[in-house]
Length: 66
Length: 161
Image 1 (cartoon, each protein chain N blue to C red):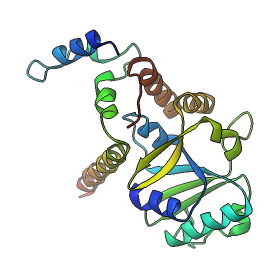
Image 2 (cartoon, chains in turn brown, red; image 1 turned 120 degrees about the vertical axis):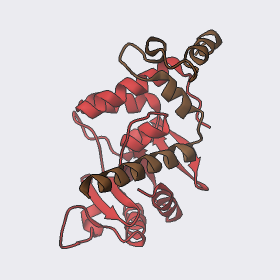
Image 3 (tube, helix red, strand yellow; image 1 turned 180 degrees about the vertical axis):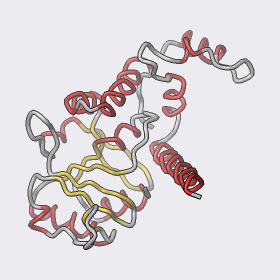
Image 4 (cartoon, one colour; image 1 turned 45 degrees about the vertical axis):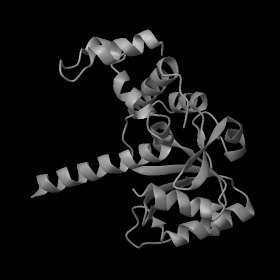
């Protein structure tokens, strides 16, 4: 991604101001910013992240069953 | 899923395999969820023995079988799909993938790249081939994966660490 686009994403998605979806999502609704965050992780971190998200879902499901 | 246990056991036993499916999609940077590890292994006598050894170390049983049966050499020594429930989670050991025609390990190996995690290296389908395979599969979740993978290819200039 061009540096100019990256700067724009960073500026427009500053958490203090909320997300401007039109600059974060592509034409298919894919969250480009989220993908960019994933790309900064190592392979091991990406796999750990996947495990963590599943653990969170398991906790959530267990809560629903109670 | 315990990816560290699954991948270090497979690599530690010397199994020749390629990670495909959702985990390969996630390693390329997708945010989509998956709860199993899909691998295409080389269907060759010694490699099937190594796979069997790895599955035994992981206490693998046939997925969904209440009798807790285990795959044996003859079951694995073909291009079918072998779904396992293991102590590391679900591992789908696939002798082949593909809808239009069966793609075996040898068909895929040229379009893979080596990655490292947990102190071991292993191969995953590269981005272009993964998009091709997922497009051919054509299920709703595959279409979602293709959209993310194309966004990665188009916008993010992917460089695996």
